Structures are given as C-alpha cells and as structure tokens.
Length: 38
Image 1 (tube, rainbow, N blue to C red):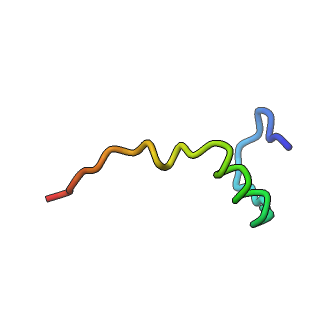
Image 2 (cartoon, helix red, strand yellow):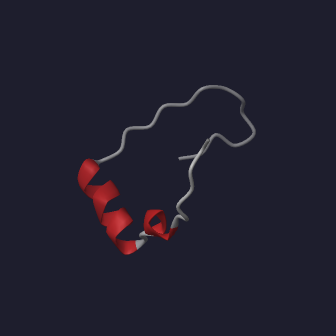
Image 3 (tube, helix red, strand yellow):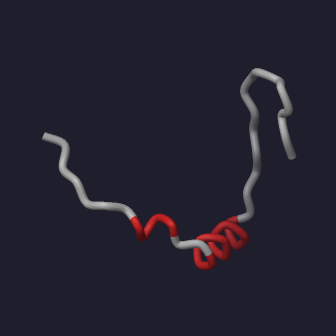
C-alpha cells in the first residue's frame, strides 16, 4: 500500500495479531529513554 506523491488523509486497518507479532519481532518501543515534561 502506498500513496505515492498524493496528498491527503489516508486510512488503514491493522490486524491486532499481526501488529503484536511485529512488535515482538521489533521491540523499538522498549528502547525509549525516560523523560519528564515539566
């Protein structure tokens, strides 16, 4: 799926199981640094 050079609002439907499997294989969210906004 791709929008090419088009501008606009696009919608995608994701499979919860596929998304969880991707997050398990590529756990980038666990690499975040902790921070506080004050």
